[in-house]
Length: 322
Ligand code: ADP
Image (cartoon, rainbow, N blue to C red):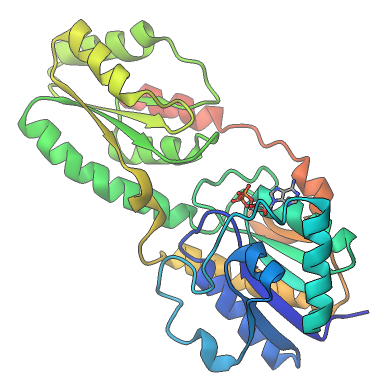
């Protein structure tokens, strides 16, 4: 049976572009004859019944804003069989017969469980980390990369003026994509990612010494969040090379800001596609980018996907940043 009243929520970490997806779900839902409810603060809102009916104007003026207009949360309470059942009961009470969940893999596990409890769900990948193995791309990644590049360009100015080394931690949880892309774009001497083991002497000190001999005087080392320890790394680099080294953790600035064109467009397309699936009576699907196309997969299957790290691009980065 196809859904008549659908709900949309954002869950887990926020990401720029989530608003474009919310907007698309609301507008596509209403124009195809569905009632659309907005649920605040992820699964917490489903548990407490914090939901409201949305109209075409409820999503005006949000496409260019970062964050999520529906707010987001992590919900330990939902993450239990009783919690999932209570959320399903609340959906029945509110007349919700389909839910679009915008979030990461954790949120998709929740969507799978809620589908199992009788409420059809569709997942949309929204996270700045690009750490959803089933999808080549997640909403928010492009904005976060561009924000990181802008910030590191600023660091580069001062690093260059003082002949220093900047050791910069970027986000990405256990995924090195953000570090890799950003590292190439800022011309980092070395990029450290969790997917590739590194040798401190060979990959950092020897590279710095080699480039120093060719005239290089300032250095940027990009470190993925999953590698960490930037303060210790900066101290060790300074003690071994004598080059003044500073650690910078970019932190949550990478999560905010107006979404880029790409995040607005991908968010809009995915939101539209999610409504189409619910209208067709489909459930337990997640929308992903595969071979640069937007398609949908079974959530359970998607959660088992393994995506290899782009080692070729990593090697290119090391060859040319010398
Ligand atoms: P993300 O969706 O960004 O990966 P989390 O892992 O924090 O973020 O998950 C968001 C929420 O999804 C959790 O707070 C929880 O309510 C729900 N969730 C996570 N894992 C599960 C699970 N295994 N089963 C059911 N719900 C889950």
